[in-house]
Picture 1 (cartoon, one colour):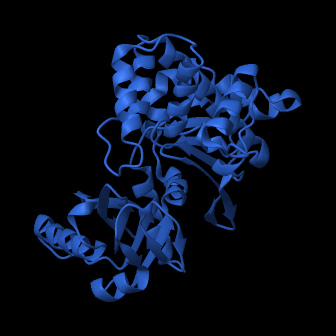
Picture 2: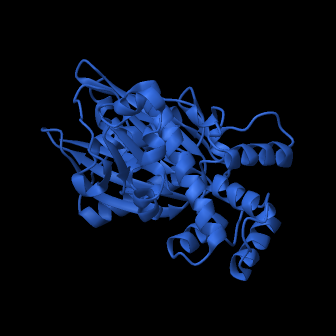
Length: 349
């Protein structure tokens, strides 16, 4: 039996989880807590508080031997500097100060990649059953603050996750309206190219809405207009009082605002098209998983909208994409699950 520490480290919140790895490889959660990240000057005091609280809760000391922390940001030489916090996270310092034998830092979307391996049937919603192949590649795509993409390949008896920067590939318009959107964004931002992340993300939802609003596609409702004005005034501020993308999505789900409905229609179709592009490049017959913070929240739109038609609409390759299993990840803690799975694998190195 081995004790592991898994963490999901973000600029706003940090979730820590103490896990027991049994001799059969089963991972059992012993204790978990969520902390406001900016309440601490550094990660180490938070982790010390967590381990002390875990001991009190459990009634015994379960000192982790291995740890994996999923970080929202780039990692170089097992070191990470958070964008929205003055934290410098160094694996070696964590090992020394906390007496943990092995600490590894991985990108948060890489952690999601590992996390899909630990999901149960209740954590998934199938959009397409497909014809799964056990040893085939697995793809993961997730729109949230940005757009993450990664893939998994089985090497011998080990599954390895490979991170990508696929979200920064070029946005490829498929209709006259999408070409107009592309031109709108080029002019608005005074740039030479548009990445798919500028359309398929939370900010992409806002961008599509602004495009349709400025093109007078439909009248803007007073409610959303007020939220939009506040959101635009707060651009550049670290703290936001409104979430315009969530407001638009909610209005579309409730079918009470035509501008929001069209926005989400375009967003879902662009999302499906990019997922299909990833499918073409990898042929992930092991499954394509849709993670991120948006898909599960707009599940009715993912089911009934244009996601799957756009996913499979690839000309002569339609039939190939129709055999790929496609699932929406419903468990928001998939990254934390992945961090625990990765931590468990460290004992095998």
